Image 1: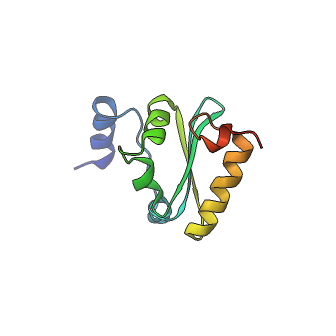
Image 2: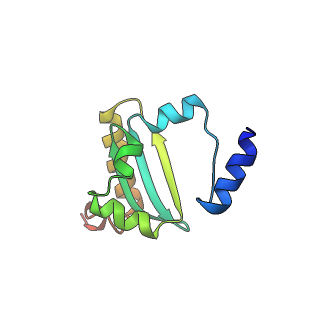
Image 3: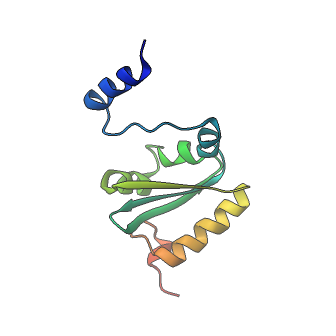
Length: 108
């Protein structure tokens, strides 16, 4: 079968966008890192995880779920370790002040 034809049919009937990923891209999405749900140019939620894709799509994670419903873009930033992901997450929350991160709305 022609994969591009299959994907174009699925794109019109199932999803709004299909992206091709290299194996390295896919591995990065399954590794430690930070994810950001954003609408237009505003960060809605910043989170980190040992496995970014799993955590970002977890339906039990209510803050991320609220942001996921509202967002127009999702950014994934791979990190070399879980600790570096937590440090980057904290830095981004402080800088971006996302509305669904409670810590991001607390003035210090």
